[in-house]
Image (cartoon, rainbow, N blue to C red; front, side, top):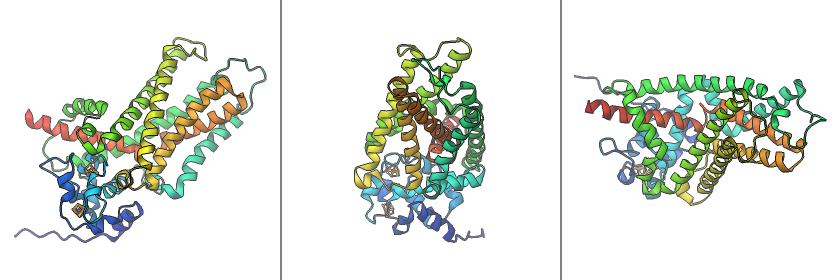
Length: 373
Ligand code: SF4
Ligand code: SF4
């Protein structure tokens, strides 16, 4: 006779879940109302009731390998309908934060960002202090006497200094994301049917680009606009940064670019998308009671840093055109510090949901592709 596995509730996991705002899981009495209302749960593997049970029993390993954790879009329709006020939407959100911490490379950085409430000043302050120290050490903290009327930030902070910081930072973030992504993919693939990774990439990218799944959930539709706008704002900003490198080092364009230059237009349109997207998401977070879900320090950290990056980015441009160079430089240094903070904490903050949700979709769609072929 096969041995019956023994499952012991993990006090440590439940304590971690409580710290992340998921302590209401213990109220769940498994009625399955939540799985019945979730429009994103597939018929063959409904959620979130299953996740609530795994959370109650402290099954951290099984939760880390469960794709449902990332298929949930946190519309909180289940939370509104739960007869026990167990807040399954918030619990799944807390589980996501714990999975990010569990898979983080190196682990101590995952724990540091995970303890966002205590580590905020360090996470945000250190990168800003780093930029101040770097500019002071290289003699770029003072405004040049011969600064022309139409000046560019390059004349205050040379591009070579910026790239010498951001290229290694981006490289580090990509390495950490790669290691965590490999760990996650291994968990998803373990013991399951074959999956075509490349067969899943194309449909997953198409779904992400349009946020098709958001549209299939009535309750998540209001957040879709903000999410999608923010996504395309980030894409536009990244493309603009790449084009600027080409413009400076290949095309040898004179800086600052005219406001009508295509690169400038793309940059400004991206900034507008970022402002709109962040505003919609912050408004959503602040309003609508239970539907908005619990605001944890982990969530607030990410949203706040994104909002501050956008505000200081826009303000830098306004200050360059209309305010004093001293004020503009101060805002720009804060902006550089916040962008560095965003880069370095990407694999450990809520930003990492981009990585895990994308891999989950690739796995799901790649599995469907493999079963067809
Ligand atoms: S979370 Fe609420 S709705 Fe879902 S199974 Fe538990 S008690 Fe029922
Ligand atoms: S929050 Fe929305 S998407 Fe997530 S499990 Fe609940 S109903 Fe489904």
